Image (cartoon, rainbow, N blue to C red; front, side, top):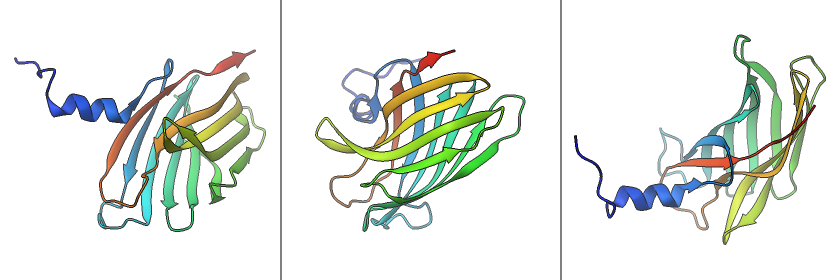
Length: 167
């Protein structure tokens, strides 16, 4: 069994795609559509963000031509089936909020918006939800950095964040 040398290019790639801020991990696949890899205007995003006992799932697209997005939001709690919470559509520059109706499983607000971080523009989410009776809140959770210019490559990002919990 061999280890990867410290100067191997994979280390540079991982360092450039890994944002570590605290203890929760958000896993994102982001890039041009698999069937249209030359598409520089419309990219697909699949993100899973663990929040307490649940996983928040964002699935959809970002249009770089006009700054709009179209996402389906769902939540998966172990033992329960995945539940669709709604859709988030609109201009990311303005911020887009999804109000999640009250239920015993989840209620609260999710807001997608853009933030600057380390010289890049990032897609971020503000989370203010109750899941199974416990409150979770976190602002400016970075999901993925957006390309500065239109170019064709796909990326894999692992963002990490901490949630404040109040009973």
